[in-house]
Length: 260
Image 1: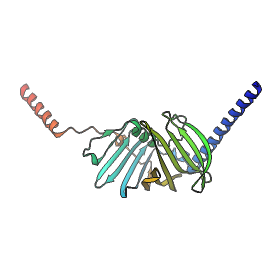
Image 2: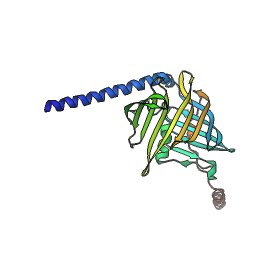
Image 3: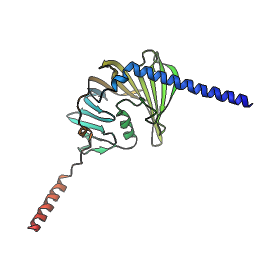
Image 4: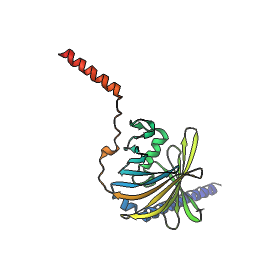
């Protein structure tokens, strides 16, 4: 009986080791295919293009700086929506709020923005970033055989990566994120891969929720190693209301008169 248990335990450990080895082989081939080592040489990236959402096309620009600073600007009917992660905190301002004051992000919105801001991508050095990973296996995705990889973060959120088994480029991700008492699932599809300075990247990204397209992003221009000052990501101070400014000025004038 003891020998049987020991044998079963040994087989279980062997299976885990084989799975871990296969997972690393898939990741290594994927990183080699897209030119991850070349990408590690870059310090910044600026991408420009167009986004289509709810039938409206808008221009956008993204600035990224190593290790995890990001700024997104979207032109919306003559105004600019800004979303930023500075490496520690995230914030945004939006023209439809009627205010130019920055609004600090928290919770799942902050976590999502922080993940997107990772210059090298979430799955590169995933262990150091606190993710657990496993290779689920292969499956058919719309006629293409893909490797299905599962990554789980410390909060229990799950990220599935679907990598083309022949060409080793990322075709899709599925995110299952806990928001309050609910779990929200979304899909992102990647296509139109092009080479830029030795790095292979998708120039088209489609986001879907419940099978419906939410947004389509088309990148038109990418520039690496453009100088970006850290002030680009700094959250501005909130503007004081004009009434408060005027009252403060009057108070200072009165104090000056009293001193005289």
